[in-house]
Each structure stands twice: as structure tokens, then as C-alpha cells.
Length: 158
Image: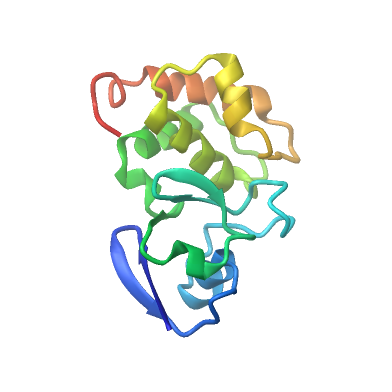
């Protein structure tokens, strides 16, 4: 039995300690916003925040997340950076097929929580490894710049 803090709530699961966090979230917690992509931490579809840092949940054993704060796509909108990114994503019409978008949003919001004025190079570094099959990279970068400029992040706390 493991207890995790997910989106601010403690939840217990009867799973093996080496089960990837992704499968605990999807199969045990029934939170399907975090996606399975490659299973090797290469595509970014499974990105969540662990103690505010973007992490690939497909390779993170659940035991490594015990005692840490986990934020998923279902909860990131409760943070200023998450709200700003989600609003910018809609305004810039980033989404096409949408499969990668939860991971993209999680990586972008982790970036903006730490860096309120990222350069293109900062964005490229933070988003590296988040693959979009539809090729919406220019709109993703535009949305991140829009989110960074939003009133919610200008003077607010992440």
C-alpha cells in the first residue's frame, strides 16, 4: 500500500512499489489526463509535476513519489502558471489532435513557475523531449510567451 499526495489530496493505492507512477494515476486513480506515449521517457506525453518539477511518470516508480507533491493535468489549473498556460493554449489554438497536450502543458507550466520571462532558448530547453506529432511547436512557443506575459504571472506567485 502506498499513499500519494495528488493534486493536494492524499490517496492510498494497493500497488507494487516499482509500478510506474503513470499506471497508478491512470489505472488505480482513474485520472486519464496523463497519457502513455512511448514508455521510455522520450516523448513527454506522461509528464506530471513532482514537487513542482516536470517528471516523466512512465519511468518513475511510484515508491519514488511517496512523500512528494504530485500535480497532474487535472490539477495544474489550480496554479497561476497552469491557469496562464491553459488560457494561452486556448487563445493560440495550439491543440490539433491533442494527445501530447497534457504533457506539453505540464512542461510549460513547470517552466513558467520557475522562469516568468523565458527566452526562446529557455523554452526550447524546457520543452525538449515533448514531441508533438502534429507539429504545433510554433504555436506552443507562442502560447508560452503569451502565458508569460499574462497578468496572472506578472507579479503573481506560481
